[in-house]
Length: 187
Image (cartoon, rainbow, N blue to C red; front, side, top):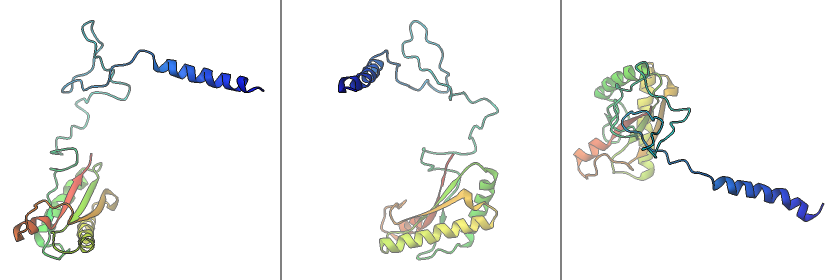
């Protein structure tokens, strides 16, 4: 076979693909407003967005998420309050155990909601030491929740050490707010 005969099908394929890209364009997807469904365009509407086969409106039987509140998409401001630790400790005090008992009830009542437990420390100590201490804190919380009947596979644990303080201050009050286990709840 000659080189020209081998290139002909290839050039034909490239030409078809290039012409395909030059065809009429669909308008970019955009939000249709607060829960409004997309409808067929009228003659005055030029920015119609086809919702596609995977989009369907929520009906009254669908989950509404009213019992899970978030201040943003990261899971911050969720339904589970932080628990706090004493300086250089990973053991749970009575207040932390009482809070975690409430958390266990909530987590078991929401079986489809995964929870991430983050262990945090104050700024004192080395990075490595605080990562290890944060891990001990996250594991202590996870283990206690499991002992209360929460399935272990619903809980992930991670240490953030001193890297994400909730209070950037350099006082005992700031440090006590930073020694915590924080919860991120996903949908």
